Image (cartoon, rainbow, N blue to C red; front, top):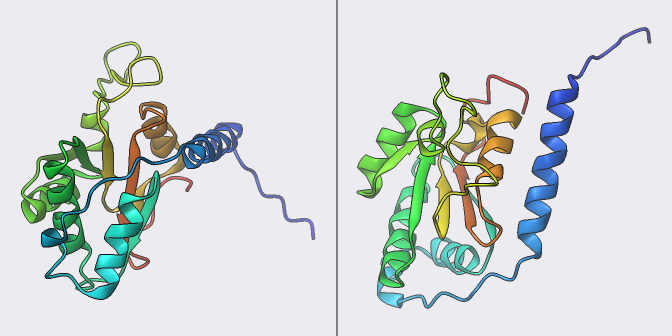
Length: 180
């Protein structure tokens, strides 16, 4: 006993807001997306199931270690979305991860800060928020284990209720530097 753990109120509020935003998104019925089976023919059984789950969900998590086919699944998902006329934004917490994501999928990707229009000299510092949400049907976040609660909360503020979220990562990735 005698151990005292301090937790900043801002971190608590960010966690609370994340929970509310995700709960709200999970209550929205995701519209069915036609899956052209040609996009999933070369995928393994688990990857095909993953495509079915992701295309039927408002919030999804794709996880697996290196070489398990996360990128292959993402490329198939992006093909399906493009064929259906859906607009996806790809992002990652770091520039290096965004660049790798862009190279591996052939789809433009940005850091989360860039996607949100972060400008530290402006007020407010983010272009996109709850009053000016991102215009996307889907937002796919790679290296999601690196998100701290503040960046995650900021991202969710800028996401429309009907925009679908896909978080990609694996348990062996680096954790966030901040709380989260």
